[in-house]
View 1 (cartoon, one colour):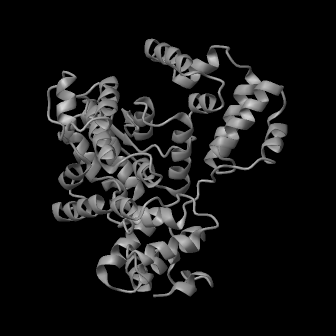
View 2 (cartoon, one colour):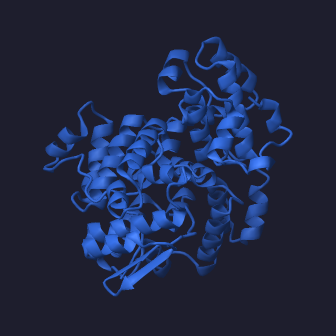
Length: 410
């Protein structure tokens, strides 16, 4: 038996289907998340599309769906209602007729890793504390701290899926997990845990067609009903097999998906190019040439403001106290920095540390997630940023400091 990681009730999809964001916002968030290796929930709050509490409620709903105790459609309705009211998630679910514990978290990742003898309870508790503080999932924190490898994490998540779905014996799966030392662990026909390291595009075919205006929401719902009645086909396959679009347009869409995954084009430009292919009956190459003449509303890169928000150096409360701060402060960075320092929200050393971390992410030495943890360690340790980076053993050791980054040594 082979198991993949449970991808039901993806956070961005939950927010979109609950009507909390539109398709353009979803694709922008997915682009930023994919390009910077950030959790979708963090990006949603970073760009100001939702509140932290709504993310917490959505994550609880996602967890309940993946434990097979809450229907997906009910989770969507619950998220829609809880985001618009002051009532708690438990009360909203009760009003919808669901009886259960909203904090239920059976067979969670931490307990599986402890039971398999891979990590201690203390290391899990410490990682959970860091996870809550910086807003990254436990799984990502464990990898970033070097407590588990990415391959072992994938194996553990696959094991979790097997156990929660009841497709494998629990004890046997735990034993397989404890002996995991590669991407794929095989014991016998009853328990084959495989990590599938998917390089699939982050924008689905239906999402791209929706963004391009070539599919309506009602069209997607019809295709979803067909998908549910025919378990052998995915939603994308239903769209392709329907004959609604020509083979050349589908081929263009698939190529654009690959280009987006490689960050050669943003979702906005991909959608505009696909619309030109459809409306003018031209090749994708010609459509892309036309699109490149136009400006792009976003490129998926994070700014200094974004990093300050991600790291918690600037909070939602700070923004309310200060007033509106631009999400894209191009041309006004100096003004932004001055306002932050003048109001005492951040001091000069914190701003310099954030600027240096941003440079390191832009030059490929750190990921955005690593920059968040670096700034977290720096803020409470009282040590210089160089020392923190050395302790965490990130950014390539001696080749850490480029000429630009050295300007912010502290």
